[in-house]
Image 1: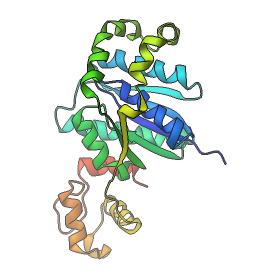
Image 2: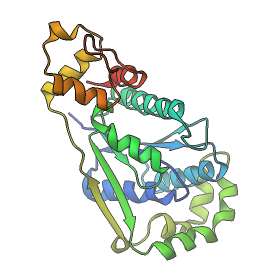
Image 3: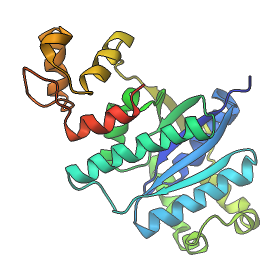
Length: 251
């Protein structure tokens, strides 16, 4: 059986982190990577930069499919935006697994908004993300300067990927989207994992049940209450709005 994996990238003002991570995965870590999903805010620069990164990926890796998920706002500003983002990520992962047969889900939190990275890290297991990764450029000053010099080129990617234009300017673009590997550091962000038993307990609690019948220790229920997944009710497990979203995707 051929394994397939997917990389989710919240995008920001440094779009090259997406192409850098894809290059690392395809070359050294997981050659089964097939899908790259970019989570893009409504900011025009981030939209164009994401399409430019997508062009860089597809020019170098013809077997990788790029997908773009557009958010309606430029950032997560309140709880409503937060819950929408969690739901969006959960839906993406579920779709990847059920529709495209993806076996493993990675997330690259190097380039997105801070709150997006925090959300993905916090809820990675509950949403079905297997590993959370980050890439750091050790020469960050030059890294940003070089991209700033070609900002005018974003105009050529504002309507979508532009592979032909990227190919024509590959000598200029590749050093930015694929810098020397010696300048980069890749590592996985460790995340706390619930046991299989606790995941089953959480899923049952999120269905909304009589706590006395379930006979679950108070400390476990309290932990999920403090995590904002359950309302503070000692008689019945009542999922919060966040808990209802998580319930749709927890496996």
